[in-house]
Length: 399
Image (cartoon, rainbow, N blue to C red; front, side, top):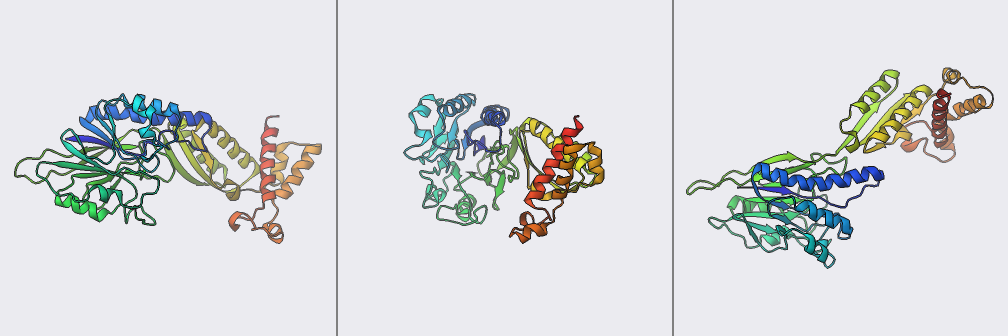
């Protein structure tokens, strides 16, 4: 007996570092991930889908987000059970209990409100969030008094951080993993489906507690996002031990978030940067956070700037991480001669070259830090001069 476990759709999410065009692609990818659940359910013979919280980014999402979500859910051919999470709690303003959602949601979609639901021979228990700040362990409350019952298969759907795993500062609402694993080992539960952690993760010692992770990546810190889980409870037989739980990752995410650190100090290093940027797959759905460290000539800096500008036009997002404090230009006479400037332009270039190499001591004397975090001997004025020289180099190169 198989079902699909997913979570953290956060439909309606926006990201400040995405351009309007890239944000539109990201939004569409999230709805496409919901539609992909239908394909995965058919291919793997899943009887139903559980969504372990955060269906929507907030309870204040727009009408269009609700309408498009319901349209995407209509393409999933099996029952879909939605758990309210911390982003969309089941409070007085809940989008999941709104008139618009109830009117547009397909008949096979059900919001989990804490009452047990029977679906495909499985009893689904739920721990919905009813406020942004619950004052108790909702999963423990949902399982209070639970005992093994022959012939009954139970799955718990919950949302939140687990004690001793992912909870930096445990609170009253932190999920007690030991309690859940005790119920699993006793046979009172068959599986626990969690949401909140965006990376697919097996939690604890039983192999029966899982975070599905977000079906679309949302941040550079996530380790294994972009998946849904096909959970196989197996087929019990009389007199035989309980079947092992089968869990299979299925990739549905289209976007990727990457971090790359490069040290550049030569033309060959800049070549490697160009090759790395050119080799990125599916650029329009790639968010790259790039750290470039080193000391460059004026010509090399101008080339790096041109590469980054071109890549920013192609990628879903390009964030140059701490670029101004780690990439230093040391212009010399050869650099200035190569510009082929005369008159006022040459005089400006020479003055900028002096300012670009200003020592950090001047900044320190003025009460500064000697460069951001003191890591490089470069002042804010020197950085501005370096950027101006790089632009001047690029302008001169075009004639």
